[in-house]
Length: 352
Image 1: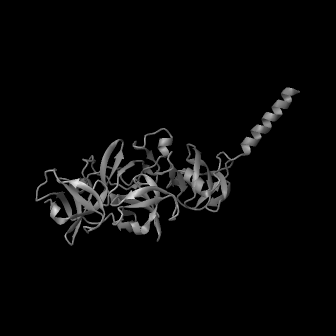
Image 2: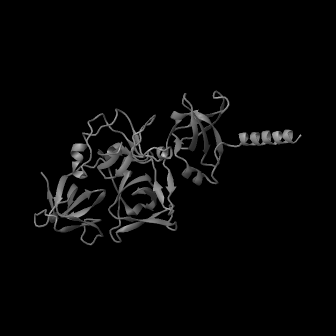
Image 3: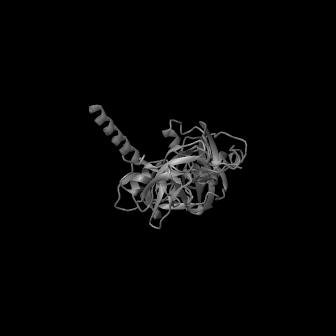
């Protein structure tokens, strides 16, 4: 009798768990989105978990999802929460999902970046980076990538026990890591090897216009601005952004923009950003000099604006090679190692 009673209890417990959702849901849509690494790329039909031909609903594009498993035929078991808080689960084609823009907090409560990065490279010969942005003109025509592929920087494969720098062929392309962002050229890592690629081949968010996707932190008076956890001046400041740093813009707003600053994701005042096009033409390459010499014995001040009163963002030694964008009122607009600023014309010699 005791065995029979115990058996009934076990069956009831098993039935209870079988009826529960296979993934626990977060309390809010915001928390749910933070915990997801995939989203729907378009309006997606949800099918029954017991009958893949039975439609049970439809969810809109950009709905964040958690994929539990994918079978050999490409059907994925997943759960979702829509923007109005509706929860559900079912199956859909794996091709209906793409990597999501996801924010994660580290142990110090700072948002760390795992956002989507697409690299649309061409079928070209590969050249490793030589730690100099001035190699861009050569590297831009010598970067190897499979024809018509996209590279995605994401932590999803790390969670599956794979290295973030390992190139993984997926339905959406090759997963890579962003090492350094620049306005016209950036460095990515593929299979542990760094490569310089044109920034215009990178897409950080398909929701952003090309002329708003790349920006420079602009704070000519203080030299820094706050990166906040939410789009509010009263929200927690999670980091101070140094003026002159090149950042990717994930969401644009008239008052606040969501950006990725050195791997941390948060919000900065739009007025603290100076937007640039990744297709901006270069004037050429130059070398910092003092009295025409590039000995490396003298440091040159780099400022946030073309003005001697603008905040100093860094100082570089003579001999440093830089990309040159323009010459305005006796100041060169330059960039080196992901830092964008201005230097007095007398301290720069253009390279032929």
